[in-house]
Amino acid sequence: MTTRHDSCESKLVFACSGGSDVGQLADLGARAAARPGGGKMYCLAGIGGRVEPILATARAAAKILAIDGCPQACARKTLEQAGFTGFRHLPLHQLGFAKGRSEVTPERVQLVARRAMELLA
Image 1 (cartoon, rainbow, N blue to C red):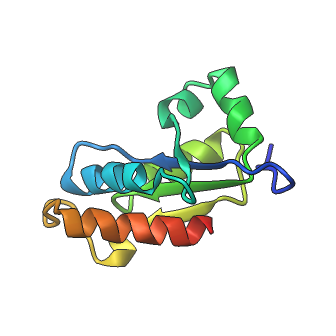
Image 2 (image 1 turned 90 degrees about the vertical axis):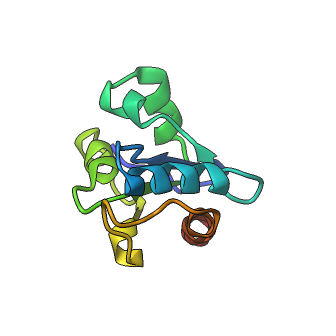
Image 3 (image 1 turned 135 degrees about the vertical axis):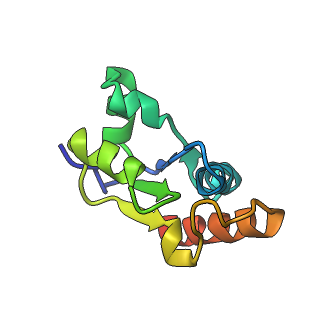
């Protein structure tokens, strides 16, 4: 199963919401990007749990973005294990954030949100 990139206009954002500072940055950045012109934050747990209505919505999305706080890439791996390919990926460690050393600030959340919106454009 792959994501559709046809006339469907939905853009979905799946974020790691892990228990660390970078997980919180991924989560809050996704929420900040979920606005008009950005994307809609969607349920990564539903993908992992194979909840059919959530999978169906994701299959119909024009674009999907996975945001991961750390190099473990749980959001990316969850989507891949559910059969999704061709989605965009934003690993926060590539922006210089490191688990346990990345205080969550409004400026950092906005940086993540801006990059997410660029990837969804």
